[in-house]
Amino acid sequence: MDPVTLTSERLLLRPVGPHDTDAVHDACQDPEIQRWIPIPSPYLREHAASFTEQMVPDGWADSSMFTFGMFLPVTGELVGTVGLTMRSLGAAEIGFWVTKQHRGNGYITEAVGVTSRWGFTDLAIDRVEWRAEVGNTGSRTVAERAGFTIEGVLRSGINNKGVRRDIWVGSLLPSDLGLPSTAPYVPAPERD
Image 1 (cartoon, rainbow, N blue to C red):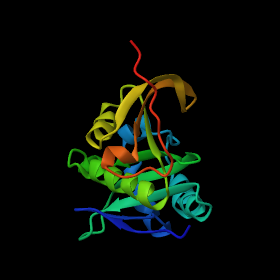
Image 2 (spheres, helix red, strand yellow):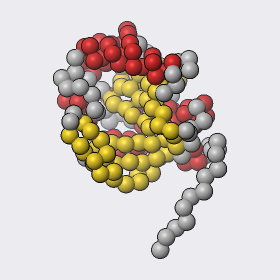
Image 3 (cartoon, one colour):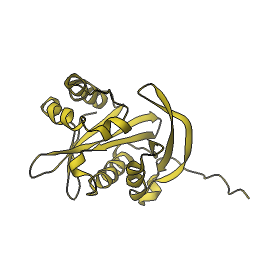
Image 4 (cartoon, rainbow, N blue to C red):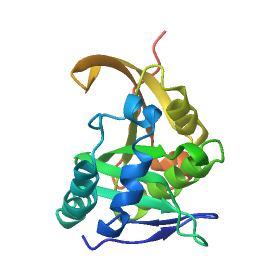
């Protein structure tokens, strides 16, 4: 798929590229990003270059991963990244991080909403799944504010730097945003 650019009320979302390598590298020096996101630690410039020059373009090219940098339109400053990774037919996982100086401004919630809506309408996704290590309350807050339903805990659901950890999992469906699904959905009956 050819890369696209999205806009929200306060952000420009476009694929990161080689010209963003230094900004990605600088942002990923934050200990909080390295703690919660399964990226190499220490995070070297070569890791950022691999992400911006290979991983992101390849994901768009083979329609397996759609990663956006979130930028302030006026200054061009990198706020963070958000992306959808295809997991199965009609289902994608959303992932995101935000730079330290831009936390608490609602940018991520805004970007997650725009990206999820785009996935439902342009990629024919019927389920966006969110996962975060148990304890990452910032990520969980974003997911809940964006409308995700928290579904539970997956034991040993992630390997982060060689350690298996439990994760929270949640989902957002097109109907949660008032959009139609591409396939019929029949929820399980309520149990007593």
